[in-house]
Image 1 (tube, rainbow, N blue to C red):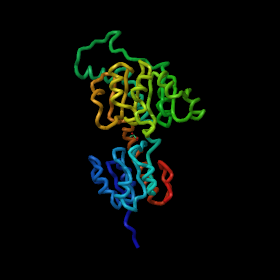
Image 2 (image 1 turned 45 degrees about the vertical axis):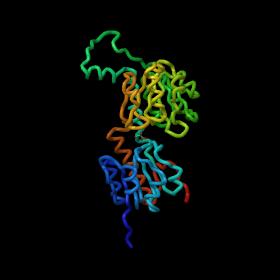
Image 3 (image 1 turned 180 degrees about the vertical axis):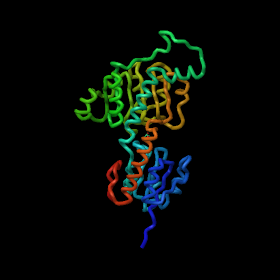
Image 4 (image 1 turned 90 degrees about the vertical axis):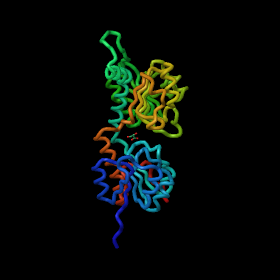
Length: 328
Ligand code: DGY
C-alpha cells in the first residue's frame, strides 16, 4: 500500500534551498508566496497538513491544530521568537513546535550595534538632513553625538543575542552590565567582563539599555513609563527583540520630554504600525524589523526550519524544538 506524500504548508515565501529540502520529504503548498496568509486562509489551507512552516506574523493556537486535523505533527516557525505561538496548547495536542535559534544571532547583534551607532552618532538625522538638501556646513559644534568608549552597555536578557551584542559593544570600548532572570555562567561573565545587576540598578546606571529578552507575559511592557523614568537622563534604549517588551506610547513621551536621550527601535508593538509620536522625533532611529534580514541568515533560518520538518516527518528528533513534546 502506498502512502500519500506528506503535506507541508508554508505560510510565506522562504528561501529556495529550504523549499527544495521540503520537497524532498513531501508535497509543499505555498498558497500566497507574495503576501502570506490571513488567519482565515491559514485555517483553510492547513487542513490535512502534516507540517506547517510559519513565521512570526502567523497566530498559531489550537484553532490551527484543529483546522489541520489529526495528521499535523510539527509547526516550524522561521524565527527564534515564538510569542505568536501558544506553545503549551499546541504541544498539549501532541504537535511539536520548533524555532530557529543560533543562526540569526550575529545578524541581530550586528543590527543592534547599527542602531546604537545610528542613534548615538545621529546618523539617521544627518542622513535626512543631507538627503533633504537642508543647509549645513562643517563646524566644530555641528551635530555632536555621544561617544561610547567607557560607557556602560546594559543588556536585558543575556541569551545568545544579548551576549553577541555585548561582545560587539565591548569591542567598541564599552563596559558591560546585564540583568535577567538568572546569572550567566562564570565564563560568560569573565569573557565579557560583565556585571550582573538587578533591573532597577541596571536602568539607573547603564548609558545604553539594550533589550534582548523574549516577549512573555512577564516581559510585556517591561520598559514602561516607570522604567524609562528610572533610566539615566542621557541614556539610550535599543530594542531588537519584540516591540511589546517596551511601551511605545510611554517611550514616545519619554523621548520627546528628554527623559532619555534617544532610542533605536527595530521592532514595534503592532507591526507595521508605529506610534505616530515616534515618527515625529529626531532622537529615535526606526528600522522595519530587520534584525535577521541578511540573505545568508534568512537562508539559514529557513533551512533550519525545513530540517526540523524533515526530521520530524522522517521519524527523527527535531533539531531545535522549543519544548520537548508533551506526550499524548
Ligand atoms: C525572530 O527570529 O524572532 C526575529 O524577530 C525575526 O528574525
